[in-house]
Length: 241
Image (tube, rainbow, N blue to C red; front, top):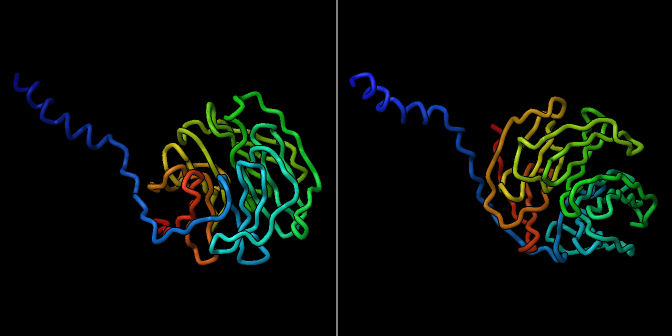
């Protein structure tokens, strides 16, 4: 009886010690409206202080820091879900068609289309895209059921893949900043930091934003999270502990 009582008294302490660490919560310092319908992802324009934003309506915009469009591509696609830009090109991902569209940075005209077949659900396909300068490979992720991380070479050929289903309920965006790969989960409302080589998790934060679909860092290190439903850009200060 004494042994049983002792075990019952120790059980709450054992459960507490086994519980996962609490995810730090970030509070937005401010938010602004972005003048883009149903914005689904955002990335930096490396040539200036603007951003490229894609819409669920299949439109590519360039916006300034106040969320005001300054350019718009003439091409109309279908269900743009991810965007990444370098000094010469802008890369868009269409989830439904399983295509990567490559645009000229200067003119925002379509230059190339790459079809990457995937057998998942229509709305559970490619959702996040960025470039990993540590490995020299592009990173393409599926949304959910399951979450796959694909590595692409500079010709946009798939060269590796990993099951990342353990990370989150879903993945809605990816970016590279300060030597790490960063992922965003819409359903979990989590920002997740990964080692760029091992893909091991090195940090996680909670962002109280409705439908967080896009993520980017400014030159000053501020985190911007894009809300699709609210059509807003939320600004955060993040401590990389």
